[in-house]
Amino acid sequence: MAQILAPSTQWQLRTKQTSMSSSPITPKMWSSIILKQNKKGAVKSSAKFRVLSVKSEDSTINRMEDLLNLDVTPYTDKIIAEYIWIGGSGIDLRSKSRTISKPVEHPSELPKWNYDGSSTGQAPGEDSEVILYPQAIFKDPFRGGNNILVICDAYTPAGVPIPTNKRHRAAEIFSNKKVVDEIPWYGIEQEYTLLQTNVKWPLGWPVGAYPGPQGPYYCGVGADKSFGRDISDAHYKACLYAGINISGTNGEVMPGQWEYQVGPSVGIEAGDHIWCSRYILERITEQAGVVLSLDPKPIEGDWNGAGCHTNYSTKSMREEGGFEVIKKAILNLSLRHKEHISAYGEGNERRLTGKHETASINTFSWGVANRGCSIRVGRDTEKQGKGYLEDRRPASNMDPYVVTSLLAETTILWEPTLEAEALAAQKLSLKV
Image (cartoon, rainbow, N blue to C red):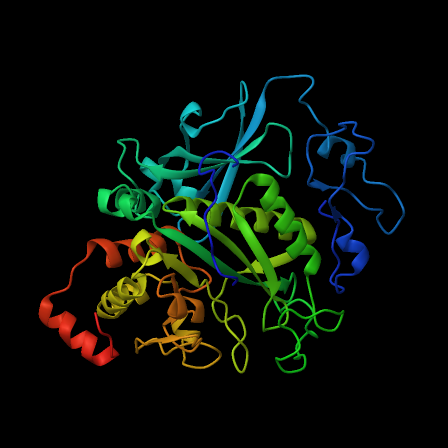
């Protein structure tokens, strides 16, 4: 990921499917995902990200196109709010729509809502009501106009956060004065794999077989190296439209695998933006007839896994003398390695093997410019004596609320005993 320089100045609101056969996806099918610009300045539709239908095999036009792209803004003040929340697995996304009487600018203007928690694995059938609290708003790139995507967290009717509500605890940590004063920045590198629908095998791979070995695919160009670029590009622009602080994208080492970066973001914003970006990616792959996988090791063997590397810095790290603060943070992270690993994603042990640009899950390590370590420090940070660190341990399916808040808690709020600190410093060759 490119070096993170400064966060967004806006921390609030900026924030047909064609019938797919079992045959490989063709370029024509990707034409259903396009970005259409307004002509001659006339605003035909306020949606800049539009999904258009294509001709089916019998050459009949899908007439839903006109309705899907219908701009209702001139005719009503009402808007559609898509309420989004995290389901019972802790990684699955759910959403449903409701009409709001007029455009809104802040989550506090939106009503709370409920859903059937027994259908998402989050409540028993005899007491199934779970309440959604709107927390962050983004522009809806699918419906356009004043319509919005709403990131919510979930509570019991009594106002108690349900177990899968990790945002609530993260918000508590990020509201601590010590954390607020340190203005924690995050840059999150979200890797993901695109799978063919029916066979659940990576996009671009021959079914039941393997492509050539890794090497030419990372940031590669060409039909034999890059698989799914249209999805990556559509997602990139949709995130920009939505107000997500997306900062880049690239093809990854394993063919059919991609990465995008979100940040730098401040505090709880990092989690909100990652979850909304994941939702948008799910919707785009849904429309393209491709399966999105956040499995940290989707293909066993000599193939790279998928991580969610998290770049992190505090105000003290970014100021003069910050390298010593970074080393103290690394010391703290080493002492809580097991706590972090247990919170960094399911199936991560299949990825963190010590191979394929990873450190062993059982051993904490750090190094300058070393991608085989748990924590990497960049050359520029070492040279300038200040900057940020990269935690390379989180898996692609990690919960960004958990990872970002845990980093802040361990490096800002948590203090080890003097004895543990001395032993860790000696083991890691750290002078703090």
